[in-house]
Length: 302
Image (cartoon, rainbow, N blue to C red; front, side, top):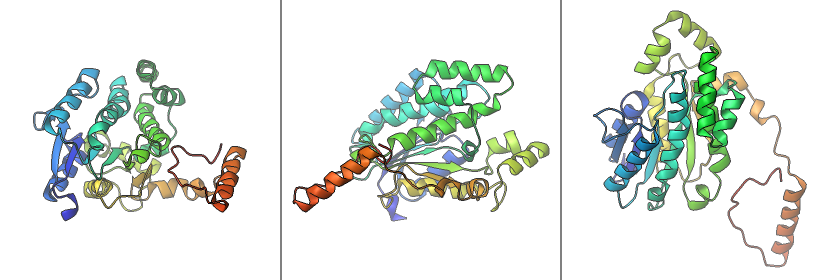
């Protein structure tokens, strides 16, 4: 399909699963894909769990694409009940996102997407999520280690994905992303048929039954990898020009099954400051002095 022809993309987590299939799909549709991973099969070999690996990835991409990149797909992630998951899924992911922003801004139609998980629909560890959102990597790592010691390591993965979702919701509409012309979104897959899912969930009938009950997927369990790769590809498409900060659930219906209409029961409530701004805008419009400018941050509650 022509929409990806001659575009340059960077994709992390390209070694296997969702990342490998997405890279293949984008190349089949005419894109140049700079793959990043921890195996020798990737164009850029770097471990984003470590600061040195993050820096190496940024340097290698700058060297390979000095004129800029058109899209960034942050697919890398691990599910181990350990601090390494915090390093990769949250801090490593954001380090790459922010480190390659300069190259995205050189494109006429830049796009960025991070891959989260439908597991973030469940409750995580509040202390770990707070440490991530504060940017305190050492505190987050320490918290993950404690959770593992306490037998609660299973909450680490979804907590990193909750934090990632919240970071994108906080920042995607701001000056660094939408304000600079870069749509940033999230794709949140359910359980799909990858090698890692087969090893961690699908190979164990008991665990499969528990997860299928906790994360119901009416369209099928597990789901197809292809559906997730297609969703990621769409977010990178130049045609995706007006979608910002969305958590796109590609989960076979899990979000709808678990939350129903919950997220939409209460509309936005505008605070006094927002109402004052609206009144001033109306006055300015009546007097011919109005100028419409992009809003850098949400104003509904202010």
